[in-house]
Amino acid sequence: MANQEAQPKAVYCTNVGLPKGVHEFETDDTATKGPNEDPIKRVIYMDDRIVPGSFYVEAVWVMGSIPRSHPEHVHEYDEIVGFVGSNMDDPGDLGAEIDFVVDGVKTTITKTCFIHVPAGVKHGGLCFRKIDRPVFQIAMSRMSAYSSVPPT
Image (cartoon, rainbow, N blue to C red; front, side):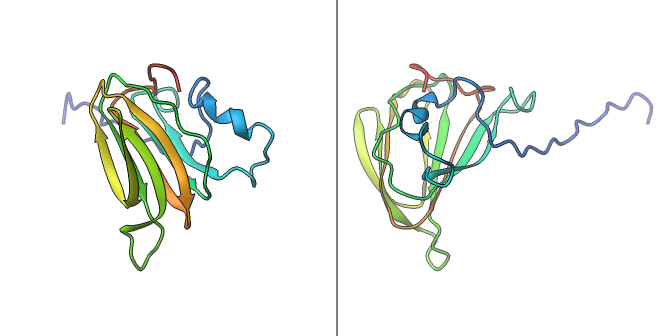
């Protein structure tokens, strides 16, 4: 057992807050709302700024319709965006209508899905147009810290 390298340790993250500069556009219509009034309930956020060596991942529950759209942007890395319905009798039923624009094409999402957005592909225009039941939204990328052009 001599010269055996130490195994890396797992790090458990329970962070809900966003690092400075991440998703600051959200404050435009939530700054005057209390936590119970905001339809986005942050579940978890992690990147290298929170846990050194990790990649970007975040998850939220969307509890109601949101009139604004997430600005269109690009990343230097591939991103996976997912929307998961909360109907336990039919998990594929999203219970919502969500608009998402990828490379200039708007799609209305009504089923549980993952979307792979390649690096450099413009995307956004995310609008939670109609939410009948809570939707679990997750986004992840191999980038060490969330960043986009323009910053979102």
